[in-house]
Length: 263
Ligand SMILES: [Zn+2]
View (tube, helix red, strand yellow):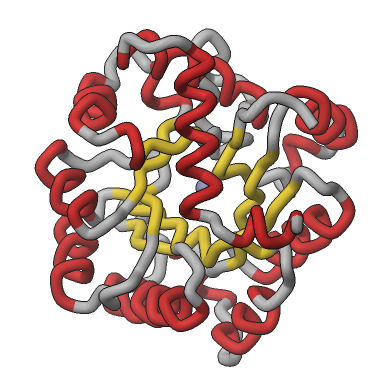
């Protein structure tokens, strides 16, 4: 296996990988420690499980994304619990709130499904991988009122304020940084990164979306985590190797099942 680089958030089922998925996977095996592939609905959850079974360096997260609630099966929580029992399923996600797209399910429905998956994660003692787009107010309210005490979570591609990050960090949340942290206009994202203890920072890509500079606008892939790590090193004023080391440590601490599944 490659260096300690972890992409904690990718969607390798996406059709933009149809032409070269095998090459992308071989590259991960050579150059990286591992990737967490996140499901968003039935099909991508099953894809993530399948990929994790086939490739030692791929781990899976299962969940229902707020953009995919029109096809939510009645027994979705039972399905998630069943899948989560597999050794290489290391988190519940991608789940959350998305108020950006007008076609998404109504806010009350999104909140209910998010709370249910949050409770399931706490019950199963698995971390939650959270998507929060234009829903910061309701997300904070849920964390203040409803979050189970021992919930572990990562905010992927966090876009909130320094103040919101500080409040969530106090509750033990981690924060995933990817391509957006390298964009010229993403001052706020970098401020948040600099304000947090490095014990809470994770690397991610959200592949195929949000490729880092200089590939902005192109298809993203897990190995580009390296560019985000280099950028993080520059911003924090530490060596690249140090970023790789502490983000790996953080990844293995939050996603406990990675180590368990290896032993
Ligand atoms: Zn995602």
